Length: 158
Image (cartoon, rainbow, N blue to C red; front, side, top):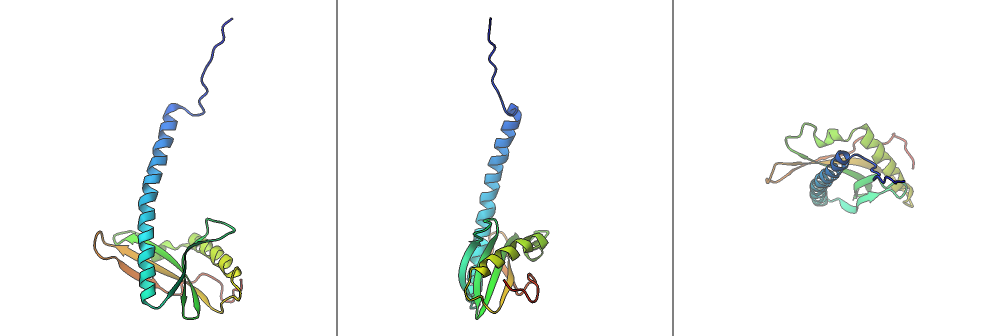
C-alpha cells in the first residue's frame, strides 16, 4: 500500500505572485501619496497659521471609527474650524475642492460630530473649510482656502 502525499495550495502559484505584486505596488503608491498628503497638510497648517488660525489638532481620528479623520482642527477667533486638506497636481483633472464629494462629507460629518461630542462646553460656532494645495513640480505650491463649506444642517446640535 502506498500513500500519496500532495501539497495543499490555497491559491494557484500565479495568483500568489499577483497578490504579492499588488501588495508591493500598494505600499509603493501609498508611501508616495502619504508623503504628498503630509507635505500638503504641513503647507496648509503654515498657511492657516499665517492667517491667524491656531492649530489644535492634526490628523484627529474618531475613537468610535478610526477611519473617520479630520486633517486639521483649528480655531479662528472663537470659531472652531474643521479643515480638509486636498493636495493635487496643478494639472489634475479634479481640483481639490471638488474632490470633497458627498461620501467624503459623510465621513467628515461623522468625525466632526464625534469631535464635538467630546468637547465640554461645545463651541457656539463651527465650520468646515477646505484647503487645496496645488503642486507645480518643484515650484512653490499654490494654496487656496475655501471657507464655510456646507457640511451640517443649519440648526445642527451634537
